[in-house]
Image (cartoon, rainbow, N blue to C red; front, side, top):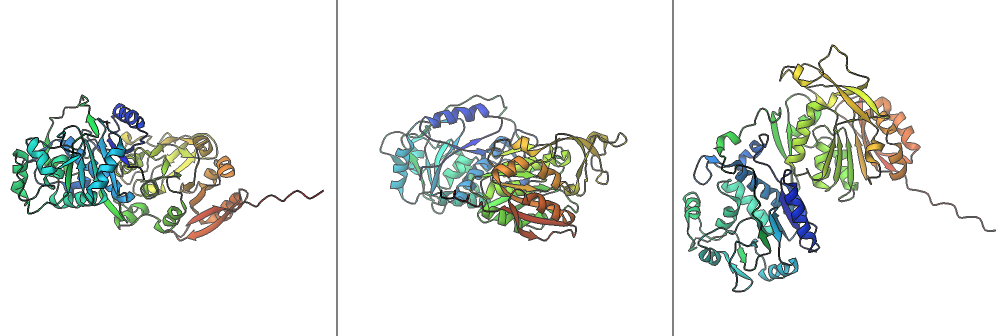
Length: 501
């Protein structure tokens, strides 16, 4: 297997990503983007990782938000290595350039055996063979950290760093966390950073097997930035939600095998949010069957994406490219945050429209306590009703505002994109949505998972029968008037041979 290369990149740093990809392509490498957290955004949800934030950072009670976001972004990369089951991967920040052939690095790594981390950037020592032990490298470098610009990490190393960061909390930069945990109790390396960490932890023995590559794999470009990196905030301010970030009342982390799926949500009786608060995915049985049948890395269309339950599950567990469709402006920020929290910004395309049979305009009636029951109707909003959130008290959950929304047939949105599965949950408009999918159903026959009203069972079955579908499974719903059905395309019959003359 070719060595996977992960590049940690914020959404605002598109030019950095383009430069990295150009350099990588010169080696025939297709890097995998890890969507980094942006600590300089006011809506960065640090509080979701409050269990990882230590009481101090370098012995102080203040921190640069970017430093914490950097550490958390590297954790996302480690989680990706573990979830993929890779033996090892090269992790780079986006301001590095690949400088050495990866074949050479793979050969050196193979000779190291069961190591954890191999630092591989141009901050390192040169000469003296391919690698040196970490202690020796620090002695030559006067205890300067090799840095997290580029390093090779094994699956064991990723698992250990995830466990150590949870145990020790985030109390220093990510590069020093890797270095310090690779030093034994008798290490001769010294320096202010090591001394600070020694005050809080014991180095009884080497906890990670860390090496330093003498000839760098990557060179650091030192790209300038307009961000004021010296900005610091109290650590305590990062452990509570920022009100203007998003109206969220809870955050949950759902374990699914080696993966951890994260969701923001609100209080109330919305069934999707209730499932999350109880520690489960919404509609987990039909969702599990869909994932089992879904081709790895395929394309999934989530019509009525809501909080992103299905979007996140298919994106993380099946590594799908996702087209998410959600017309509710009230739920949009939660959906965007859940996409970002799970590192899916690069794989999810979000459309804030309502799916329908024909193109036009409609009105969405927003149910604030039960967002899943918000519904779209034809025509413009009634003038007497508020048309935007600004017309309503910020936390008036009893109010049911309306807003104008674009209606679009999904055929025109999908066009020539190859689609493997579609989920439809549109609060009673599923038949209209299917009418707007006729071209896609005829040409591609994707798997269909439909949450629909029980009265529409016969209409949906009759419509889909014309496109060669049969209902494969039927699942119970939390409401007696709703049902969930999984439709699969019937096997195509071979054409009859021409009769012999």
